[in-house]
Image (cartoon, rainbow, N blue to C red; front, side, top):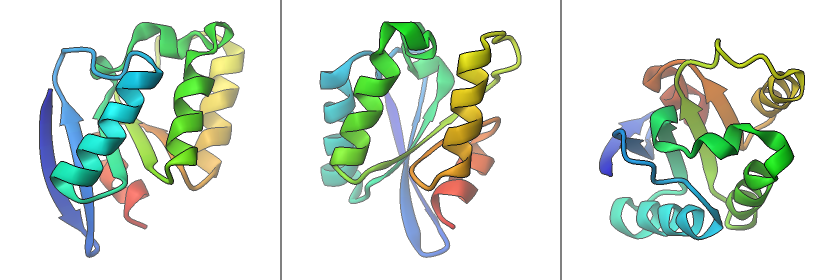
Length: 120
């Protein structure tokens, strides 16, 4: 896991990159939130899609809901950046659309977009 600290609009964001899956279950979500809080000093997290478990994007498995519940509970904001064009699931597309309208969880194409959404 590669963790970098970015500052934009006077807000600090922890950016997680790499091909290793680091967001795989509820415990890994808690670990990620605590890493951002104590190592980077922020509750704003941007993570590359390749570092998120594939099951996260299969909504019927419930993993996304369990993980996002922890982010909300611990008042952390999350942006997942990457390519979503190959997903055909209407429920997933609707979930992404609705999430992007909110203020806590975002699904965007690039790291720059993730930083922008998290630091508004």
